[in-house]
Length: 432
Ligand SMILES: Cc1cc2nc3c(=O)[nH]c(=O)nc-3n(C[C@H](O)[C@H](O)[C@H](O)COP(=O)(O)OP(=O)(O)OC[C@H]3O[C@@H](n4cnc5c(N)ncnc54)[C@H](O)[C@@H]3O)c2cc1C
Image 1 (cartoon, rainbow, N blue to C red):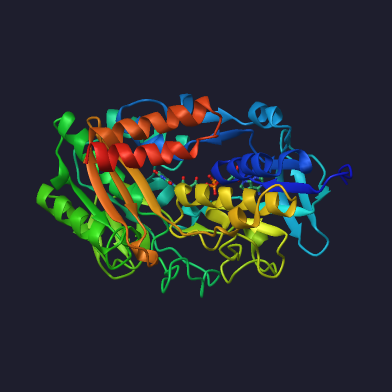
Image 2: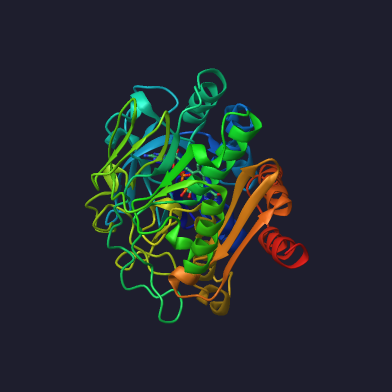
């Protein structure tokens, strides 16, 4: 068992966007009133959103998308354990983990006063028949490089299919009302910003290489419409633009049944011919999170809109692991880190009740690369019952996407709120 703490001990599980962000916000709002430990099986953050942009400009994303987290955490007096978490006991307030630097380590335990679960999800490519042989994706540097090499060395100019497998959302966000009269709806795809971004960037790449264009690409979705979480207004605009450019579009595929050398077979009975199949899978909960008293019907962590588990209020969740994070978007996780920091700060009497009252009102904020120094920008909350729906395209969103990553790395993840507000002002007001 790890050492006991004289101050309340906050254990944060996960050190990527939601874990690092939560730990930093807790330190910011609770100051030195708490001890904080972060546990992750790897010691670097993977900046997932910019992997597609690297691949379509033929850069190795492994060289530029990893950021060390040990030193930034140490600077804030946050202890880091590189270990694989394999059990949580909410009643005993204990987490079991295996040190991950070398194989063969024995299981250790650590106790907590507060727990933040920010372990993301499993991206279940292993549940798609034929993916290993015939599938491609962009969610990590391994797969990004595999696709990059094929595009540049093996691609024969055949059709490209891009889309998502069916997402199986749990019941953990049912009944929440983030905006008056609104809800957290049920999504049929986990995160459809990436397929939209990929289809636009791939079309530009095809044109630049003189190997095709939008007509070479078909984008598909298990849902009624693609990117439904961006809200009706934005989706209609997007679909109009995409069909005007000549992209193929297939909806209500229900799920992917299997990939073959020649294409994709869908649960709807439909199929698509494709040389390259770029797939975004089902986001599923980690096995050890299933069937816990804090988990929902699919293993995602249940929370209220203050990111606390209703039955174990000292347990929080943030990012893709939280049931309320729909779609599985880093930007929503970012909003949650702020809320968790204020909640714990308030319990330590460092944050006013008024500030701590603020609850999650999710906003889909997505800036997607389109190639040729262009990007699209979506800011929308209408899916949840809000009133904002903005879609912009052009050079300014592209510049902001690239600058955001630079700012994130330079400031070790501490992207100030003005970063987001600045993006909004630049994209919507000055250059709208
Ligand atoms: C191609 C692509 C593009 C995207 N673009 C955008 C975008 O433009 N904007 C946006 O907002 N979102 C985007 N997303 C979504 C975004 O990447 C995720 O929402 C975000 O990464 C979630 O952050 P997280 O910290 O919750 O989870 P993750 O990023 O999945 O991090 C989870 C962490 O937990 C650790 N971990 C997992 N299991 C264990 C364990 N058992 N023990 C110890 N550690 C463990 C992992 O090592 C990892 O560091 C994109 C996703 C993809 C795939």
